[in-house]
Image 1 (cartoon, helix red, strand yellow):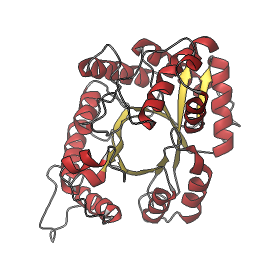
Image 2 (spheres, one colour; image 1 turned 90 degrees about the vertical axis):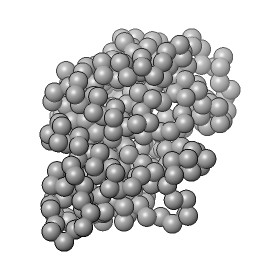
Image 3 (tube, one colour; image 1 turned 180 degrees about the vertical axis):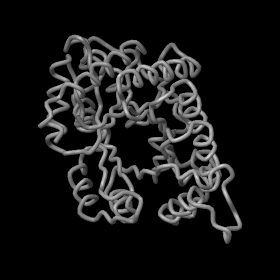
Image 4 (spheres, helix red, strand yellow; image 1 turned 135 degrees about the vertical axis):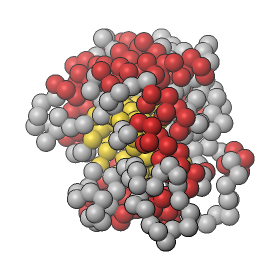
Length: 334
């Protein structure tokens, strides 16, 4: 069995509030801990009416305080929005509060639109400083250096594990060059997953941070006790993705009986392509589909996502997925 983790955006659902989202996130994190998930990651997005995880570090602290063993972290922090020193202080504080349970996944995209990126008051000069910012951030979290005039306090010496996240070959190359673990966003960008994994593994350098590459595959899961119910709960995510891609994002919609009554054939084809790395169905179908994804991509770890409107159905979906991962044939995950 390979490790399996969970990615949550703390969705704001139609008919609910951000406060409801935070309660549902903590309930899901506790269920994930019971079900043997390795990590519970939250993602930074801004100006999104259906996502409540904008203040990612604060929400990570909320989840870490409400759980006891599961690793909690970011999937990810969009580093161009922030000063590396501020993120080092935030995650140094998290590590000081919660010990060796904190992960720091870093992304290069802004996680929002350009007007919102400008409102975040980071430089918009077009210069890509992501590699330098990653190195600066890791330096702040590393061993004390008497010659360093600026220190992250808390932060210095915590050595919070850093991951590179990506949906293109850029992140794969950077993670390989720095000798860091790499997570590919195949749950919404499946086209380059094969090439990204190969680039990462072929070019990985042992820089003293870990001896071998560690590739995490992201996959959507929509699981229920029947196939019909799994397909019904998936419709919320399908509608939300179609609205996002047409510039009309909103709260996570309620599921519908027939997705064909809501999305056009062209919209449905677009969403199906975006969500190609998914497992949908009853427990047996989800186990078989996850096993097929693992055989195809050979990840070292899987991180599962799933925007589902009803919090109870969301918990049930991840319970089914966890059982599938636990009972998968050993040869599948070898």
